[in-house]
Image (cartoon, rainbow, N blue to C red; front, top):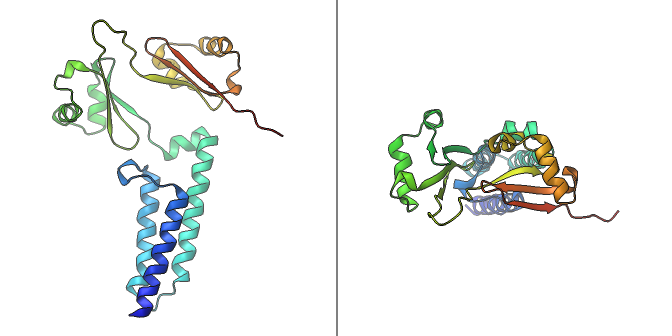
Length: 216
């Protein structure tokens, strides 16, 4: 019994440390790869607690391997877009600029009743009051209300440049060409490679954050 207690405590402390280092968020905010990693860790950790003849080291080594794999993949996703697309989902517009996308509702197996229920939960009682409804990467629904009659419809901010890379999807969504985005960069006194984040909302307001200079 004492042996089981210490084995359980050791694995609990070790898993807590690993998840802390991985910077895990709430379960409802996990990406698919993060959820798979967490499930695998829990299954592996359970083996030496269920079977006292099972060496603890046989659980610690796979946990370290999975942890290392998750950290490496997370880092590579920030540097290589194809890998990011492979491991991450992307936000889906269920309502875009006040127009309901019935095709996306069907693809994501969301009924109209579910969507209207989520809108009500977020304080929107009338469908027409929603300017955007976005199914985020974590599975939650983000809603942007329509502006009041005397206000400018700003909508949402679209990411045109992220860490020096242009977003063709955002350009298409805003009806911009690559030259248009380059012109926005020049107006900010920078090239795309020098920009960490370039945003433009539906009203045309531009926000630019340049990369921090690093000392050699």
